[in-house]
Image: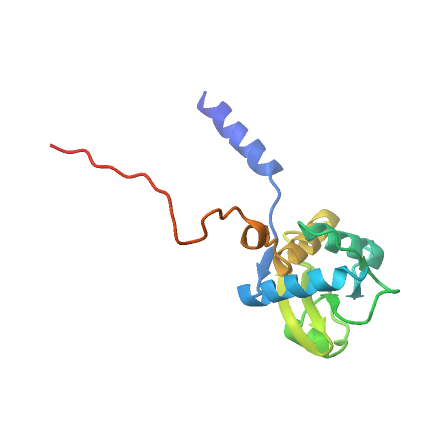
Length: 181
């Protein structure tokens, strides 16, 4: 019986997706990026720059994955035909994510584990940025890294913006009690 339970845990654990390692952005930066993205997407697609994409992952696919990561908003990222600002910059390889808005960085070795730098820019100003590493070298791990990065860069703010607050923050409901002798 123990072996069956152990085998079941191993099978379930082996099927679970391994998450990429993401660092950043600060919460206030992510909120500002979400607000600016909401503002920009009303006029149509938002520009995306894809730099040093790995072989087998065309920039159009990266743009689609980036849009998938943005929940609660039907944003479309476009490689061309969108206003130049604001723009999402995704660079595969190493470097500083806060330097992406200033201009293209030198080409870098993408190697394994694959790294992704992401920044949401308004001209040369960085609104929010993050760095991430794929959980593995396979294509699915890299795709997951892209949409998880945009999910983190533009977090869903439904609860803060539209959440159920019938009585504001002044009235809170709770239940408490004591039992003793």
